[in-house]
Image (cartoon, rainbow, N blue to C red; front, side, top):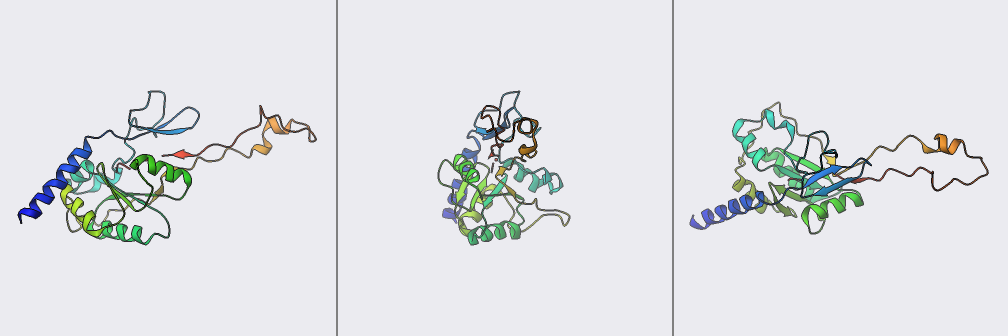
Length: 215
C-alpha cells in the first residue's frame, strides 16, 4: 500500500513539475508561415483568432463535461498523436475511449507532421504519443498510461454525458489550401506562349507548416 501511494505521489509530482514547463505556442505570420515557439507570438501574428494559445490546449467541448471532469481536463488536457496502420495507436485510443477520457487526437502522416512532433517532444517521432498536461508518454503501455491518468485524477470509469461527442482527429499540420490555379493568373496569361516564364514573377506554391499537443 505504501509503495503504491509513493508511486502515485511521484507521478503527481511529475505532472505538477511538467505543468511548470514552458508552453508551446503556434504562430501564423503575415506570409502564412506557421512557426512554434515557447514564447507568446507578437501582436501582429495570428493564432487562429484566439490569441496566444498553447498548441495542446484543451478542446472547447469541455464545457459540456461534468464539473469535476472538466476541471481535470482543463488542468491536464490529454492529446493523442497517432498514425494510420498503427495497432498500438488503436489500443491507446480504445483505452481513452473506454475510460471516458476527453482527448484531442492529432494524426501524423507527412514530413511536416513528423518535424512538428519532434519539436514538441524534443526527441523522436514515434507514435502513439500521449500527452497529459505537459507529460509525454511515447509508446503505448496500458499500465503506464493508466497510472498517469490516475495520478492526474481522471476517473477509472466513464463519466461522459450521453450527449458528448468526441472531436474528430485532425492532422498535426494544417494543410494550407492551394491558391487558385496559377496557370491562369494574369502574370502567366500575359506572357507570350513561346517565352519562358520570368522566375522573378512566377508564382510559388504555398508552403505547409506545422500547427499544435498540449497535450
